[in-house]
Amino acid sequence: MIGNRFYDKIHNWLLLVPEQQYDVFPALHHYSTPFQKLILNYLSWNGIDKKGNVASNKVYPTRMEIQEAKSTLRKYGFSSGVYLEKLIVSEFLEMKRNIPDLDSEIFIPIFEDNYHNLKLTQFTTLEAQKSNKITKKYFDTIKVFLIEMQGYLEAEYLRTRIECDFSETRNWKNTARVEEFVTPFAKLQLNCNKSARFSINYFINPHLKELIGESLGDTLEKRFNKFIIGEMKDIIKMIPLNRRYDRYFEELLKFTRIFPNYKAVITDKNSL
Image (cartoon, rainbow, N blue to C red; front, side, top):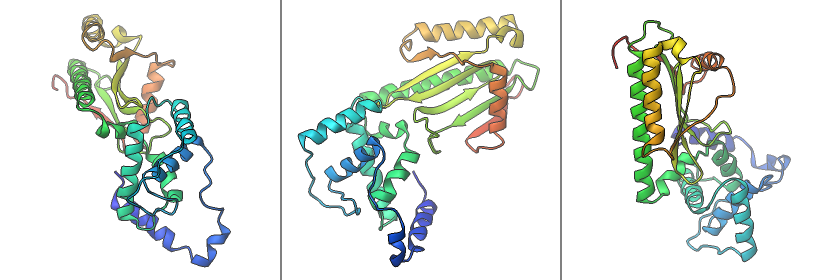
């Protein structure tokens, strides 16, 4: 969630604009994309008008508005708008408590910039939450396995891992990535789709055995094969990297010096 400092910054910025200068700004409530219009509609249908006033009565959509909403949801990859609608209303009301002057013009770009599929999971069924918990457990299990593998390696470079957390940052136009875990010889990614379901994809460096040896390479491949043919076969997929792995890893190392959500860690030899 966005911290109070961020809310205060926006609120103070608003107060710096004298009332008589409002007319030099573009007219409010012009939304350039269908998704922005959808956000506005969800607010309106839940009793929140364009000025940010909150009423107790809902405004029921017309049949045409419902069809338009369904079309927009399909266009943006959502199978349903149930979770999205709940998220939009919930985040608006939470933000409104910190920014009393909040209206849709302010809220919509903030919501878009900070939207992540992961936020939908709080509204899913208990069954879906249980499934996601199991998937996350598998993801963590594979991470531990890769760290154990690194502990057997001599070269510090091969014992370097990069951990990336995308759950608390701006979405960078990728709303599915939750976590990435990358070593010089294999990478993992935990994802959350627009149905609020977790999945895992991975990729193994084609030069795996040149890097870590035949024995460890065979062990790693067997472990991943076990995952993809077992009970999680529909959740764990191999996704090609489509670029040289070594250059990809070096680029991520640079990211660790720039972006706070990328962290480089050196695994101790023969330790977890």
